[in-house]
Image (cartoon, rainbow, N blue to C red; front, side):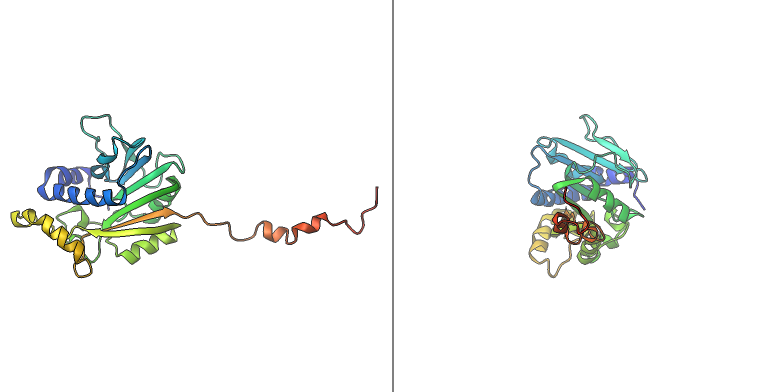
Length: 246
């Protein structure tokens, strides 16, 4: 079940906790993708808070928002680049996206397989997709005070297995949001400390958000084909026994 776009906007732009989440996740996205010079960058779900760093240098930036969620104009004060779309039918050409960011789009969908098929379709050769989902082992997936408490949380194994089954090759992963999902002043003041400590002690402490980067895998055709029809292709060069000289 998708969250309402107004609730997502209020969380990320109007709450202290949401702005802290935006800062933390944006920094982690930058670790994966430090730049996007001349590239096409697309976000699906509610990814727009993390696309702003690419507006200056990317060739094109597009924010896709699923119809069950709703859409808002973005970025504020600039020409709108956000688009309302169907979950399984994105208004993008096949194979033209260099970077695809999926946030609040996979875990909330009732058709995650179809969403992954669209991700695979639009991604171009050499492109990468970054999924940000609630971590099943973290605190954030257990609290409905934030958007990460809704939908289907994942473990790393679960997410990577699903990606592999839809022809993606997981490349890198990370966890983040070690700070508690609380608005209380103490936790807000110490958020940076918890993130630094959590990154060092990630084996012990589980981050609230799981991030997995994957690339598009194109497999060689399998099944019956030329190999079955022409088992010995060089035999066509041999003279036929019934052939008569001309």
